[in-house]
Image 1 (cartoon, rainbow, N blue to C red):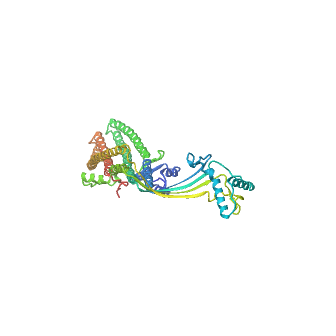
Image 2 (cartoon, one colour):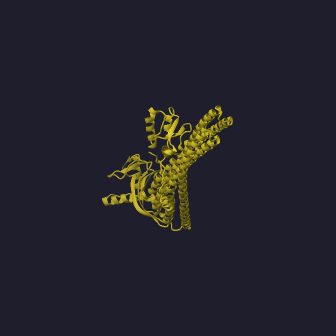
Image 3 (cartoon, one colour):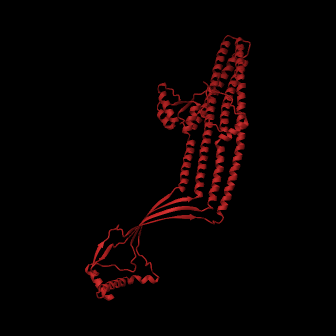
Length: 531
């Protein structure tokens, strides 16, 4: 848990931290809620990694790429689903041309009255009544219309309709479309690529956090070593001062050791400044405001150190080939290029689809008056006005069918595109080969660095034991007057250097282990600690 130097509030902060790790709140929210009470955050290496996994801007950005790839798959799949669309239109025919203009039927409209006259006389003849001449028929008809108050509009085009409405809906279903299925497979390969990129960036980020934390921890341990050495030097200065007062040591020794104390204090200031800067760098990597001071709660001795059993270089390389996301990424890139080739190849084949169209058509004139002839008297008329939505104006239309589209010749554009895709496939295969070679070298170097750092740890452990014995003996000899202060200081310097070399070896080993995990594709989030 995150350690805060106020014990009564530890449970509250722990709850907030767990909420942070679960992704329920951002680290900026956590900081805002603790800003009024806490200025120092105690963070372990495992906690730092967890914070970075939640708070890293780069990982959030990469996660957006995965979401975008999912939407691209949905978009590609839409091509194989039914496509349904609707349309509504209105047309105002200001002037409509005669549909029979230029043909022998253009004068047909003028004969409509003659047809009515012929029908009337035929009916009169059958009934035994006298017939009328064409002019008498027209005169009586016009008189009947005038008596009824009906004025008929005349024009050269009786088919003209001023208002036309179309309400339509259409559906299309692809039956065979090779390009659509190739696009879906390509989108899925692209999603695999961005997922693998996210995983590799996560592994890299974990290693960056681990390195930054261990660098800051080494700088902090260097400060502790200098502080310990300074305390030992001050103890020696006190002993030398006592010997000088007793006349058993020269004042030169006292003055020399005083100069060493000042020099070591100067070194301590520089080391403290370096540790502060290293911690600030960790702040930035974790996304924690630099106004909040980080305290590293780990120590090098708290880590469980063991030499990894990788089974040798070949076994480690095989594990890397199986686990590393960037290896899978280049393989996915090759498959993506192959699907792109399938996409180009599919353009040589036709696209077959079924369609269904339904439309509701309205042809509504401005003058909707209708003349009604009396059944008993053909020269007696009445009129009525039809409604806007009268069924005589509105009609439905429905049609279904199949449609095949085939681009037979495109000027060799598809052939050129196919050649380009084949070149891209060869380039991707070459990139995969180069990556595998570089991974082999990377795993080899990481294994060698781990083994070298492990040997340094073993040797420095023995060296510290000898340096401690040498320092205690030199100090005892100086106190008894049989040794010199130079011997004592040399032994102290050797002990400090041995301790620093041991910590550096621990630091290098832990970083090398992280580099080995990253090289093999293992994303180790939690570092194993000693019980």
